[in-house]
Length: 499
Image 1: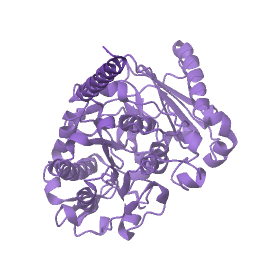
Image 2 (image 1 turned 30 degrees about the horizontal axis):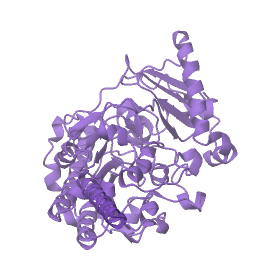
Image 3 (image 1 turned 180 degrees about the vertical axis):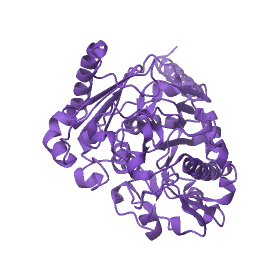
């Protein structure tokens, strides 16, 4: 063969090899993130504990969230970083512990503390996504800002568009009852058996707007955050949701009479029923009916949004996340509401549905996880570069295998008012107050899952206390305490009280 013929033959061989390689590449399954940009739908409730039927609650009915759990993974040991709205939501959206972002309550804003923060939705926005907010994502003063239709603590850099809802809240037409007669403030347990339909009230309005946005942005990649304000007080829901619950059949938690006797004085009386709320056994049943009714109302709105995702052909390419901002006490430990560091206040219901990770759908994991883990998770799932300052850990290993040995997180870290700091491990909860100077709590979760007996002063547990205190100090320093100690103590106000 002539040299020119050999050259032509070689060229043809090379061309064939390239074509074979290209065809082979086409046949190799691509990840969803490589094939096209996945969407994110982030749904978050307000003041919701784990009272979901899909999380094992015997009375509260949440069929739509149960349906979502069958399309995803339940995280049954997920904990917030601060059991109050403003601080928890700032932590979720920044991917940082409160000791690092310095949002240590409901005062101020995330960007006021960190002007250059790149929030979770901002990362998506910076990468060509539409980023939208409906109702409460950052802190809002409920019910006042729902009544006014405002969002004073929002972060405009996080969104291309933001929509507030405006609803009557406790002023809605219907039957109004105060189930906590000693509390005369804005956070009383006011229940409203409301007139009208779902869309006459806040969460129905939020669902309406979310569905409209999905129609508008369905042909482009989006990050849509939808905030539902129930079951935050006032407990407003249309009558049909109250009708799902027989008031007299409601089962209040069983709590030892002397449960608070061994709790440090700095927190013992805070939001204690006998002094703050005045909820009697009879009133307690009405309160629970109202709370569960508002949860079921919120759940129905989640269902409407999920139906819209299906109807608009978005289900195969949309990651759906559902969470609460923190847990909530409903009489456990003779206490109500939040800012405590018991299990009911720190643990939240959490579900992620990733359409292309089907193997684990319908399963749950009891591995310890934290809300600060969400930001890096979503960034990894869609293939975006997140800030290297994030302090959480991507949950993707658990989405691929709920028992993954690659998941190495062994403790959840939560802080609260009065210098409260807590770590939750598989077997223990250790809490200290006044940054360690105003008393401590230790609960043996294997033998005392209700956290009724404080073993912190029991000599038999001295070794455990020492070990967990060391772990807590190491964790809080990694979370930003050592670096920002002066600012943290200053923002925490007066905390030195009698132990």
